[in-house]
Image (cartoon, rainbow, N blue to C red; front, side):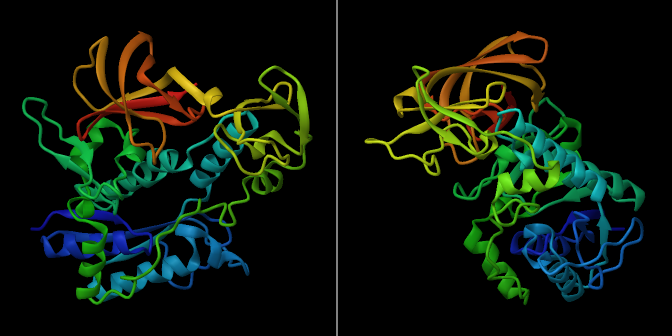
Length: 369
């Protein structure tokens, strides 16, 4: 009897190719599309549980959770002759939206993709897998899991395509879950995955990658927060690093550390957001040098290795597209670490994740504060 695996299907080329690869490897694949519950159509798929939602005119813009994406995922499942379910996770997505709005209103920069992986894509996926008797769960992420010597559990490592590697957003997965996870596309380059999808006759082979947050398809974060939390007065002053007022802004939630565009005022030289102060509603503007950060503190740590030394060297990534920097890590307390960079890094933003690597292996990470 073949091993059963539940695959998160988004309707994109990566998860669609993953479905094909898993089937070719002999797995009994079940596709699962996760609806956000935010005004989506359900005629394209059946849901064995949960309330169904209604489509709105803008639902085709819903990023990786739209009605059209669900239809694409269903067509792929039909093409590959695998069972397919679409479940409504409105409540779980609501938790992610709460987190997103709360972080911006606290002056931090959220990372909803990491939280979605932790709370929804893998947590709920594993719950569903156990309900249907599956031993494995899978996704179309560009990452790999490799055996380790003497640890008993696999190591999470970068995908082979450096331009598509998504190991950063997976650092928060529970370590004991890794032995139940498959990343079929992680050993391929993106172009190879598109070729595989074409050869399999999947119509999504040339579908563009989703770039936006699924519940903010227009990228208007401030507009989303106003609609979600209601109108609130977050306007205030733009100040320089000496505290001098240089202008005003309409809401501090519109700004994040390192931002250069959209400051609403012209300067003689490039200026950047170097701090957001929600308590005073001030946004601090400075030069690129003012963004330099020699060290950071992170909490809410998650480790993907057996033993964590009190002090060690590694490569630290401070955001998804960061190349990584040499750093020394010191555990400074319960669930807290200090990360000191060998060279100053620019644009370290509270609320983002810092993820630690030993070569290609993810050691773990935490949330910058």
